[in-house]
Image (cartoon, rainbow, N blue to C red; front, side, top):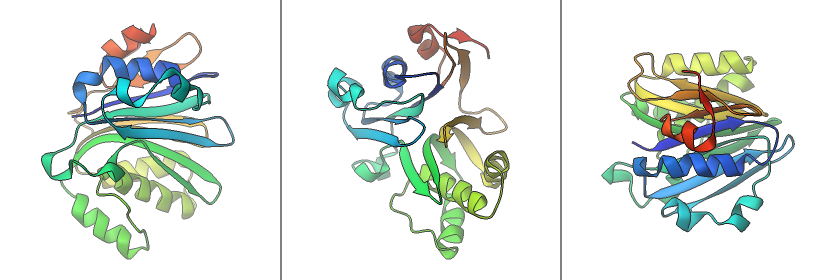
Length: 210
């Protein structure tokens, strides 16, 4: 199931991301992670455990930035105990900084993984998030605009999914065409917040848009 959150504001986004995850804790208790971006550098911390066990006030201070994504993780039994699958996942390539957090049940994950291994991608996790990131990166390297890279990636996915990502300081949010997995979009005092459930908007004081 998992709970995801993505935000773009002006500063210190690790705090509203933490509060959003707190409201989404019931969606995943196995691990938690937050990734932020300050315009130059991406910051990431993630670990097994519930949110309060993973993050302290001091830890949140080490995650500066004006945009970011986060997740509380629930995994299928076969993937449990694989710490490399804890999200968000961060990637740096050809001047791009990409952070991805998804909750996805893809029916074509194995064929996509095999295809992009054939194109030279070396996977370090068994998560669908890395498959999605690999397709985005491949499209960008091939010359696609950021928007087109995401659109083309989503056209390749089959199944139920929802996700948030930051690419070079821009926040992206997406879900499957049928909307099987939930995603809510809200306005904060200084920006925008995307979360798995509207309760995570309430706790941060964000106004539900849709």
